[in-house]
Length: 175
Image (cartoon, rainbow, N blue to C red; front, side, top):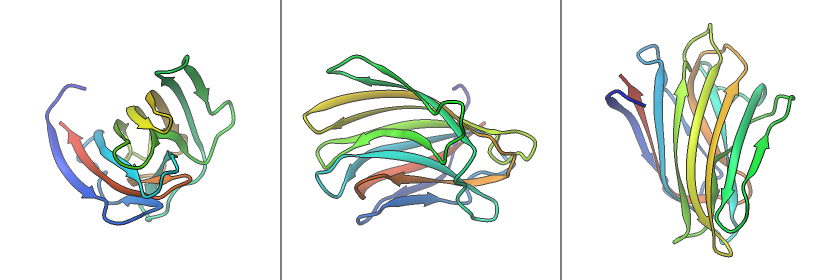
């Protein structure tokens, strides 16, 4: 994605958390945002998948009307196409691949398109790398959409099975 970046917010995890909500980062100032998620690991030795949900301008986490598609690329086996099918889901899965305890972990980059607009759906693209259990290296590339024209001002990352205890999330506006 070309263009210069303006840092809007950066947050580092402290302590064990089941989810992270980043609020008040999307506005009418930008149409495109870059989100980086670096050096995430879990609080236990149980690996966990990561989930993305958006937060509307009222501060509520949206848990319906998502669709996504991913290419799941583990280094030790063949790749898989993962699609939310024709039915809307409650989240965008594989937001950061799979995270595990340190020194294993994961990082991702997301681009979010038109989140603040009330005349367009909110779209995202993402790619991630992770290293977890057995050991397994995993690459992931995906797309997603929130099929709602709600004004989105933030997002939430959920850790499905285990809490996360390390990682940094930064949000940038793309000029």
